[in-house]
Length: 570
Image 1: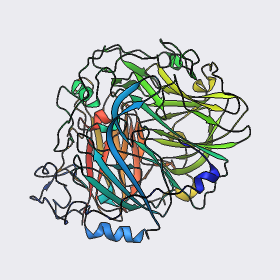
Image 2 (image 1 turned 90 degrees about the horizontal axis):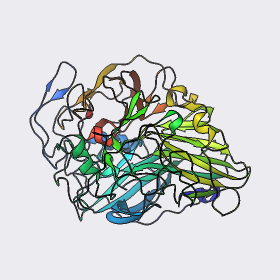
Image 3 (image 1 turned 45 degrees about the vertical axis):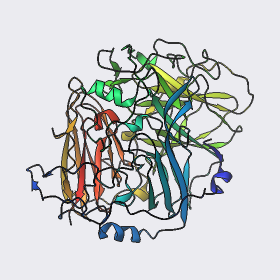
Image 4 (image 1 turned 120 degrees about the vertical axis):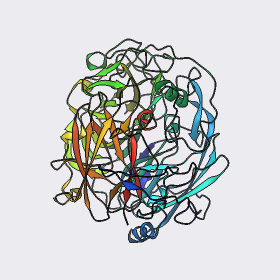
């Protein structure tokens, strides 16, 4: 499903969809309420936004997502040919290899069908909502017009059950991206799909391309749902950003068994090994056990621990880990010829899990992270936080090899398979590359053509990540998400976000609508991993007007309060 030759990729046609563009939220200024005051830390506060209505235009001093500034910026992108798509979000039954589960998905499959366009194209996608809850669609990593960003109550109204919404924007920058909801904890169901924006002047030479989407899975197992897990974790408060439809329907009751497993060195742990159509042939020892334990919140369970992540690795025990929607009992198989040069685009779509990734018998050359090119770097393994993406090149050897994916700190693993010959299942041992040289974004440098011009910041915004696992009171600067809050910026500024992690937990921090540069010539990214009690300064150019989210991409942290809004002042 996600396997394409280079020739086929460039010749892929675009499926037809409904035409026309719905007005996002009515006229600018809809839902207006009183102005705010500036706090000493630069936060602007005021009356909370109205449930189910966009916060756009509620402050006359801020650019509305539906204002003329956003239209003017889009016209400068010089919209190209229109590529039309249609997605339906629906409750369905999914086959994930080890079992069938009831969940929610796009077009009854997980991941959803890949969306592929060329840089400069106009994307026109109609999302039809057949779910029991309202939903939206966020285009993770895309620098798009603000009113298409898919944040309910901020850039658009929620899409109610039975309704649809037309997204339309210019996909200006090539890269590896993905789509998912921004409504409650829907991300931790099956609602995600890869989004590939091809470079019409592609500088890389390769024969095949493999899109790999990694996920942690609990929905529909033992009666568990992400909504129930969130309530377990935060004491019943539910989602901070819940839209006006509330939690919606669950798929049944169930209790977790509370059995966590502590990771040992190199990720080895208990549990049978999972293999290609053979539960004994493992990508990694300690791999996902057939059936697995029931998902449960980590509260009361043995802690997940990882030195790479600075200690605590995650809050949620998952029964399954998937690669392209498949568990290791029935993995996806990618076929190539010996000597083929393969581009692998890796996306972490997980809700609470960092993944360590390696291809047995091969070294990888990293070419991109979060869609932007880097100075090529060779490595045995990669570490991806939730929301991060990496592109790598490999030259295929002859044989059968595991693409091994370790749930970092959680003692479990999954896999896909790269084959040049044969069909019969084989036992695949844990690849030594998982324990070899490991690369993170901090070790990369941006390619020369995408480096920011050196410049002192015009504005510094300090964001201290606060909260604890015990209280599950995650916040930014001690303040949980407030729809009315704004951190002000102005168009044309070089802005420095100074992230300070004051917690004992790691957090993958994501900025909407922009890419930032890591320090000292580091890569351009939209998601960065912040270890416990660490600080990182990231710089970006304020060139995309509107209201933009900044949040932890652990969905249970963000929906418990660790998110806020950057607002462009007029």
